Length: 375
Ligand SMILES: C[S@@+](CC[C@H](N)C(=O)[O-])C[C@H]1O[C@@H](n2cnc3c(N)ncnc32)[C@H](O)[C@@H]1O
Image (tube, rainbow, N blue to C red; front, side):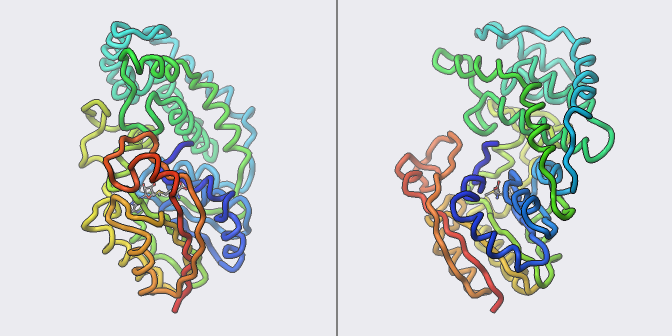
């Protein structure tokens, strides 16, 4: 899954080795900004300690919980075919408009039909925009007919979230869907013709074969609150936002799938109202240094150790590698390594700020990894 700031690539580029040295010294692993769950899942599958994952966003808890709540692999053939059949019976009842050929007229007809589907939250909010009518109806049907029991229910929901992220007609995140203009309509057509059911099946299989060595827990929670529950012997993983734009603006479609509803949406990006989206102090320039200081003070007061990763340059949320190091050394003995990383802008438009700027900023990006030990 493409995710802004995902540590998946870094797991094979220094972070995996660092975890290999630090995790075995710990009682529990606590991912305080879990995001795509790449790190909490990596640790849960490889190490014999519980992995806990927290994030403000519900889809993150679904992605993490789909693996870290389970100590046994799931056989996809035991669940997927029956799930698909139940969803298909729902899809067949609806006369979904055909958008194989993308034109201004077919997109407009598709949007009109989708916006009238008041019983289908994804279709109503996003059909004709991020998804074709057919894809959107399938997402709604798959969500309405999820397996009833755990753990297959959460694995199935995580599979739909993965598939939706792969099919969304947008450049990497869900903030600006492609429009049927002369230049963009081929991207729209390509995305709308992706097979959401096949992608859900693939994701169900690849998530299902993973499982945790020890049962963990995934929760929607604020990192600063979750940190108050740390204990001596815990290793916290701290990978906070670096962008001055809230994650909930980029990933509201995934959040709607995880929550099952979203209220009214508006604008080209089809966002739910800001008050219905999670707001993070870490994405507000005037609040982010204080939030990080408070978090590290709490982690230190619980006698826990931590690994903190952050881009080593000035970021649009008011934090930089230098300020992060300064705050960390107030509370911990700090050891440091750096790795090169491709900076993720996910196709967002640059506004001149270092972290969302042009190619040069991306080419020279370095990510620092701080190992924080109690003083
Ligand atoms: C840089 S991303 C983490 C990426 C993650 N390590 C991965 O590999 O995918 C930051 C995450 O922090 C979450 N977040 C923002 N503010 C938060 C807060 N106050 N408490 C918990 N999570 C928060 C965002 O929703 C986002 O998923």
